[in-house]
Image 1 (tube, rainbow, N blue to C red):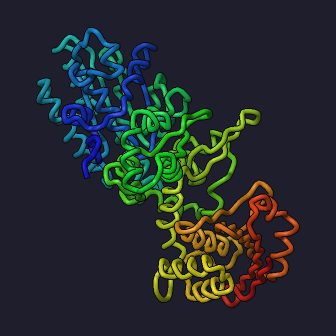
Image 2 (image 1 turned 90 degrees about the vertical axis):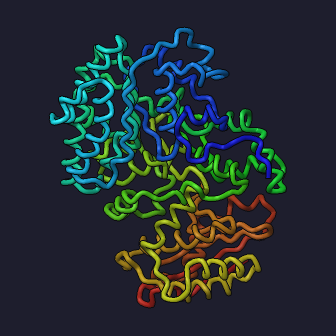
Image 3 (image 1 turned 180 degrees about the vertical axis):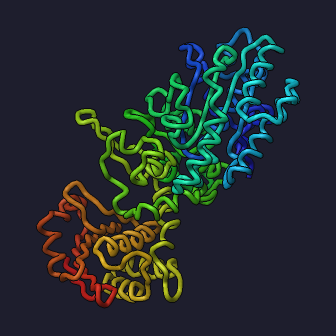
Amino acid sequence: MKQARRYPVGIQTFSEIRERNYLYIDKTQYLVDFIDKGYKYIFLSRPRRFGKSLFASMIHAYYEGRKDLFNGLAMGEYEKEWVKHPVLHFDMSGAKHMDIKQLEGYLDYLLLPYEKQFGTEENKDKEPNIRFANIVKAAYEQTGQKVALIIDEYDAPLLDVVHEDQNLAALRRVMQNFYSPIKMLDPYLEFVFLTGITKFAQLSIFSELNNLFNISMYDQYSAICGISSEELHTQMLPDVEMLADRLHLSTDDTFALLKKKYDGYHFSENSEDVYNPFSLIKALASQKIGDYWFESGTPTYIIKLLQKYNVGLRDLTGQDASVSDFDVSPENMTTALPLLYQSGYLTIKHYDPMINLYTLGYPNGEVRTGMVRSLAANYLIPAEGTNSSFVIKFVKAVVADDMELALTLMRAYLAGVSYRLSNKTERDVQTIFYLVFSLIGGFINVEEESSHGRADVVITLPSVVYVMELKFDGSADAALRQIDEKGYLIPYTADGKRLVKVGVNYSSEERTITEWRIEG
């Protein structure tokens, strides 16, 4: 099928995108803003595959004086002089899963080409920080122009050991030493741009660089990476129209589908709606909706962090937090919350200026479903068959309006499930139910909370709404009473659908649900 435009799937080099006429959503106005305001030291935190490296590559091209690449863009209209500066661009994303010796070898790999370029090879046996400083000074002296310094994914060497105190401290010292000359090199530097996922920058790594401007949570920079709702509806309208034709949907319905699947990121108090650019571009390129961000890999450190803090998945969404709770350095973390936010698994869903509190939650359907599927294996081990086969049978029973059969299937399934957790608390059971119904939510509309209180499960079908409450070593009747007393049915009374209450009891002795009552 003929494409309207070429999509830069996996391409993070600005020059390649522009020279080969790939789709590019203009972000150069943000660099114009930095220059206009005289910002010199910039730090930006965004999740993986969110366009940080592309933005860094664009800055690289600008300071190299590549005027030809900016034709038709905001920077092309702004810049008149196009002064060429020496550029040092260190990409730390290649330094993952390394010990100290390997990391030092990687720094050597990064420094050697610049030493050859600027004639400082005699320093190659010295410490990386000294070599780094000598390169900057030599570049300035030889060109007569100050240096543009770009450090992309500065925290990549540290993320995989963020849950390991000893290794984290050792690798952090190596990186802190490498970055230490930046402050004293100020007379030789024109512009400094650093990117990463986490906020190590606020504590130890750049502790001496007290003039570093962290723009990560400012409203005006909320859409600096990713694709804003406005950009999608204007600059990418032809692409969405083509996808709509492919899916046999209206353009409005396709926008709604993309929003539900990939939108929902908010990086500040009054943030623009931001779409995951990686998933959105892949969906447009392939003409198919998929969970592309999660398919590209769930970082090991996320799984290990959730295990370290024994995170209850049901507690992740809808919780209130101050900025100090979720936007802190990993060194100060006492929960998994900060890294889940910084890594893009949670985002800001609401901000209350009266009490300065943020409400966090999953950004969209892709993250919600992917998170559950990635972590289900840590909780669910079916004795026979697979999770997916049970889910399909359960969904078929519910759609056929046979809740009795659905719960019978649930009882058999839970009886064959082993728990990796303690298997003794109500929270463990609720986690299991949350995971199972979240998996089911990939097929039918399943939700878990309302403004009138939180029901354990709400299943919405075209003609019926099931409101389900789970009791732990209690009774099905008690579960039904709670539905009535808490008013869990109230939000659905105006829909004109049949309302069905389902009370379920779980027995810790028999390790499955043992009784249920269905009314409605």
